[in-house]
Image (cartoon, rainbow, N blue to C red):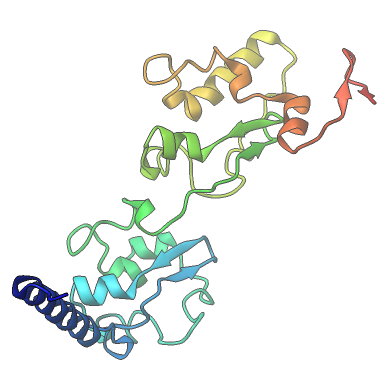
Amino acid sequence: MTKSPIILGAVFCLSTSLFIAANSLASDEYDEDTYGPENPIVWNSPVKAAFSHKFHTMEVELECSSCHDELFEMEEGAATANEDFTMAAFKEGKYCGSCHNGDDAFDSSTQCESCHFPPTEKIVFNEPVKTVVFSHDIHVGREELSCESCHKDVFVMEQGHVADSELASSDDPAVKREYLEALHTKFCGTCHDSSQAFGYLTRCTVCHIGVKGYSEMQGGDAKQDAHGKSGH
């Protein structure tokens, strides 16, 4: 069976195009000696964060000497070993803050999700009130809030900050109510005011899950009677 010259020509052109494309890809192979590690660097201390050499060198066209060795020692773990490798230090112009100052690049206190990962597991507070649950996934994922919507003005990004809030010491119901209203207004009530989100005086069990709710969240299957005693 004789193949049409048109078909043969098309096959030849396609083969040539694929050959040129393959050579082009081969010539554009990522050069780690020039651009630094191709895979992002992930820090787990003091908090989880990622950094991309590829973005900064290939896309922003920075030289290695822009950061090394004046800002960052070219040694694995050198930055995280320093006690001043913190967001506060960035604000003072150290490390990433040398460029991420709001002028040369976005300010280090904004666009948090560019480098950081919101927690995927629910957070359970036991102070100042027990078994109060919070989900980053609902707020950041579903509602598409930015990290800075709550951090740093409402919640300081520091573990235990809410738990350190002053506790009410009075048995007077009026005083307790005033305390709880002030506590909610200071934190979650900033948005949960019945206008931006459901009010903190309504739908309490969405967040206040109690001992039974906490047990279920942890996968516990023990049932309790009306008096809170475990049953089998």
